[in-house]
Image (cartoon, rainbow over all chains, first blue to last red):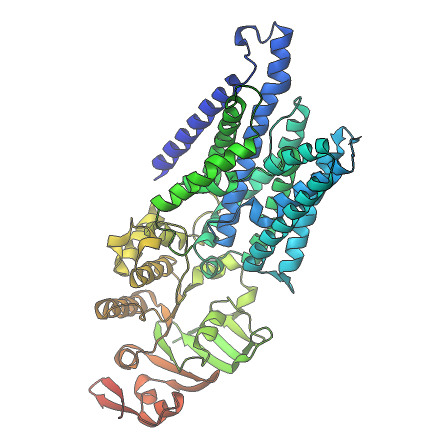
Length: 322
Length: 259
């Protein structure tokens, strides 16, 4: 068994390495890798645009997939993902408000739009949790339902703002709704990693409890899991992770939903690796699909992820209780 | 006989709901098989969930080795008490063996893989539950009865001193019911296991259990040895049906309903 797990992890790591290499090479602007250090143009292109973008893709992909896997286990629902928490919608709404009001300023080097998006995501998470709370406990079913509804309402609000905003803002808002990985320079990626890596590790440390919860809540409780506490901790960490990723890349869909289903062993670490690979590949595709310009990565993940999810669903008919 | 668990004047009221258990007191001996009987809604499942620590008594206390259940560290308590629910709702295609291995959690280190010994115990438990042939199957593809056998194996793999079973026989055929009872009796005799099992099969309780606890409207209506409880007048009262009849034949008790 141990050998099988190591093999599975090795395969996933290999997929990740290849995807990263492909993503670094592919793009509308050709980079001359032989002269990446000597030629200023190639150097700028690679270090200011291409590499940060790929790193951001890896980080966001890994984050979305590992949150999706955690939430699916937590809610014992194969359809749970960052969207079902209401966080993605909240983040998009926060960003839209900032864009529509023309807040172009930066606070400590971070654009206000990012901060507004993060605030929106956290607000949505808190709102969802308040609605789902009964006394001291949070009911998973209520959490899931209120999350879906808060998300729908947020997206409706985003559409309304977009409708009344001027065309430029409207286009920019669309970026947040669909999700995109364009980033300039390494600093934003650095900020993200500082916040996200500890959160990933915290979720990985909870894998065993999450596995037991995925089997059955009562089972987990009688096997020594403090169910309510794990629920609270995992929900908080996932909210934080998704809040950061939405602030940076917008509401990128389907990564959190589909990747965990494609991983069969060691779902949490496996999702982390495969999620990263999936998102950079999707972005590479988005950057090279059109003869000129590019498609936002969120459009690609939606177009690829949706059908892929349905295919998995058809192929694995074990999701009997869904 | 020493008591492993003691229930003292326990009451339970569901939040905003009706009182399900009212002033129940009983003690569970080690190395004993106890049947919990009573009509639907009499509080059997609530009582067994209280014993499992899934619900907290609204009054009274439940002791395990003299210490209140909620004062036990969850992980240590999980080494002592295992619970098999009436049904589980696993939606993910876990392999049966992995579900059974999850029973080893309270014994395994917090991080890292389960040991060879854990695997051996899990396989043994699958064997004992008559489910060895299901090991590699996905639990979502199993029938109700097969799933119950896997869940039972998981509870056995926990190697508890107290095993709480909520109607395990309901989904099992005759052969597997017999096997279940033989396994439980063997564990009682070899490991001193104390079993509490909810059952509606009074025929089964007659010869195989050491003790019967009958609930009626959330209270203990009667408790004692099977031959003391399985009597027409007592059962008629417990089940609220004057036509229940019993007859003792050797060490077996026949139970039927008069026309």
